[in-house]
Image (cartoon, rainbow, N blue to C red; front, side):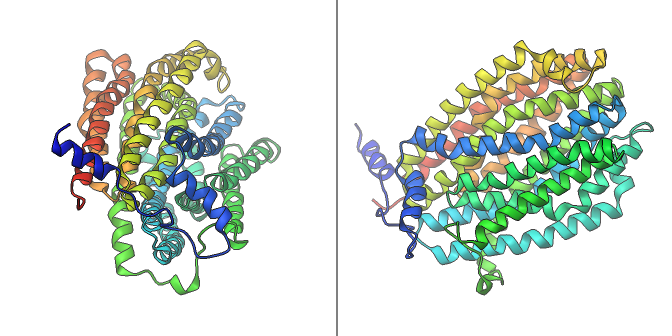
Length: 478
């Protein structure tokens, strides 16, 4: 072994003392269990123990939109079904703004805990609460003011315009509850409370499932009822998450003395959060481009693609859950200087998520018409939807590694790399491939653009992250 390799190995093993980041309170047992997962548990077990609860919660949360799609499908009105799909980018924008706060605060909280600075972690948590209220008010006000223009920009046409405005308007009116539910869940995960973070998701989904048929059919509100049920579900989810903080079930708690954000915290939060938000916005923009291309093949094609994408989202939430679960582990160990553990967690995470997604892909491919048929009885929608699902399912073995790399960069406080991955993924590769393959091969080319993109991005993003971690290790004092 060369001298350089020996130095690198020594630095990769660099760790802070075992008591780094511990709270000086009577919560030792509760703290030890959570911080043990972040700090010491076998990498594969740590990835699974942090990721599986999130996957369960996210799969339940995706039922918000699937339940709306399912019950609206029972109306046998494919234009209302298409409107739900057209309105989805609005939800993505709300998530993007939520992610700006959630990702920025979560990264700083995990790094602060790893470095043992619990006051900064609590101050950052409180800042997250304050920013969520302010941002949701801005999104709701601006969105409702520009509602007709937004619906037209989403691709709504004569048959879907009114339905799109109805559904979107109600979602915007309830922005505080939807955005709050998403952000608070991220803040809970940042301290290692992965199981607590799904409690609100589960309750919210149950409320949505119960209220959807009541509002859609019993009260005759149709698509408006679906939107109201979604907002009320998020309201219930947010309420239970706030209750966990109020009852002291968490390691960190917001405090009145931290209500005024410091310039240092705001700078660090936005340094990570703004690129994270832009990543989601770019994804939303690519989704809109995709919808506009699909409209050229007919509005029923939009409905079919929407159903296929909603079904695929269950597979998406698996890799997103593992990636989100890995983020606090990477952030904590980056703060503690344990680079060897970071590399081990990355390797274990990529193997776990890719193997799981291959199984999901097999299930989608074998039973594609059945899954689409759950949401529409129109033969054209079923046939097109099955074709789309069998193409886009090929993203699953690759995109998990991309997401895990991006989340790791955010956790390390290096959003420029995370944002660079998204720019290359969406603007440099996906959108150009979407346009070129659509022109060259028609509809078939359009739906295969995403799998090709994710295959390339897996190689790029993982190699970039590994090189960055090793370079950080080499910059440590010997």
